[in-house]
Length: 275
Length: 291
Image (cartoon, rainbow over all chains, first blue to last red; front, side):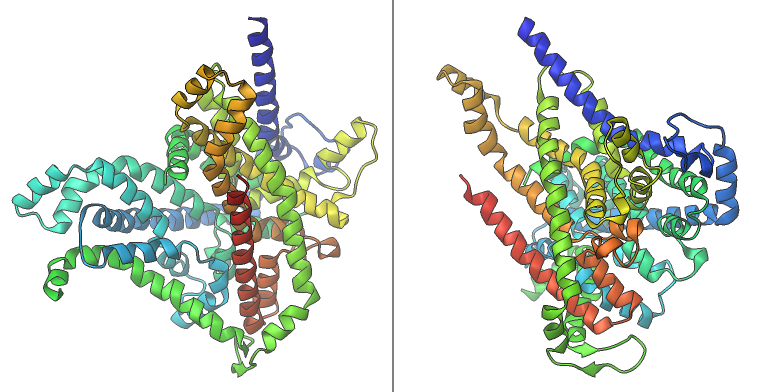
């Protein structure tokens, strides 16, 4: 009995210490976003919230087109997510439930493409975008990312287990085409898998930095991450504003994540462990 | 055969977008990058054939090798504590009597959702030379403060701690899933045979967890070798004091897109690819081999 109590004290102390380390940077971010720049530069640091949040936010909105960057990011991330969900589920369903010549080889090729590091083709990809006239447009961000191997693999795993063969056979009997089977039979069943793949893709696209940094040249097309890094470089005399902008940029994603976290984390864990 | 293929034309149409897109935006650029690596090009003028020149320069380029060294140093400083802490958190969460499991998992995972640009800005403030929170802690403990962002090792510690903060929770959740997938009967059988807790841990838990550990080592190796945003936002395109934040990808980015040495940038890319491939194989052998 005594031993169990000691154990649980150690357990909770460890978890709590980890949680404090995990959460402190968020707390510090919020504290700094509510302070003036001279407060932030003061030593020892101010550890409690100030009252300047709205004035900092106002300056962010004046200095950069925050709303514009926000909607650019939202547009790019949503388009990529919708396209990925559609194309990945179409291909994942085909791989899971149909036999066709060359299926095995095609699937191995698909898996092999995941090993190719994207930085290798950074320079040529940029040159191609320039040749297509896509530099400075959202096409450069959306089109190369609209279907990916990971998502096809993920959907295939899910579809294999969850779509009953009998249902597909019944559909075929009624003369359904492949696309009808996908749209009317597979899609409703695959919906739970969409939550994870959609969130995963959306978060990735929202946070993407290197590629947008290279292809976005026009300030009006900047995504949040690019706008934020510019803010950090140019205006670091107004540090409180930079920090407030940072808070505004991470908040939407954190709120989205908190809504879906339970399902997201267990799907992620299942995907990594099962092979 | 052809009739068989024609019969499945709808299925091929369904999978074709991936192969089409990969061909255009994946395969073609790789071939192109090989071609480019043997040329001199500033992106505007003509390409001139340079033979092995770019690669000959690469192997003697001190800046490149320094970037390789920096990347490895940051990888070591981040991966070892990260996987160690992740394993501890996973074991704590695995305990049968822990309450509010979901809340803990969400709390530990939250840093992973945060964009690296934001993380770099926050950590810039934590590690700041004159007003940073870390220096405040050092002073509270009666220790001298450190000019974190002015000394090479300080920059590397700051970058590594961003990686640790962002990825420990992710790896903990992977380990936890691994622990939960170990069948309980194994532990029960060991108990019947009179095994102690430590024996069960080293004979059952660790061997059963090996594939998951391998997974995390490989993913953090690949991630660590591709580090870019953290140093770029924290210390800029030149890598900060003593260029100690200059990672391989940051070097590739600077040579290609700041200095416009496109041909050389492509050669750096291939150098990086070789290093990642070699390093992944060595890692794989090491983790697989120690039975």
